[in-house]
Amino acid sequence: MSAKVLLACGADGPPYYVEQNAALARALPRARTLTIPRSGHDAVARAHPRIVEPLVDFFAAAERTSRP
Image (cartoon, rainbow, N blue to C red; front, top):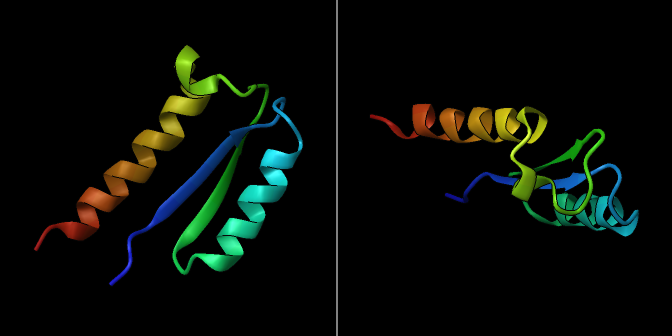
């Protein structure tokens, strides 16, 4: 079994992040990408709801699927 992977980046960050995340998502079996609107490279440091809410959803879904 492989882990689910979330590849996140800010839409206002360097454009190559979006491209790299897309390439990684194609290579990793259970990966998906998330581009955060109106966020830069430091989006996680700012903890705006537009970055926090998708992370909460991702980890909550992982928790629900890992319970017996």
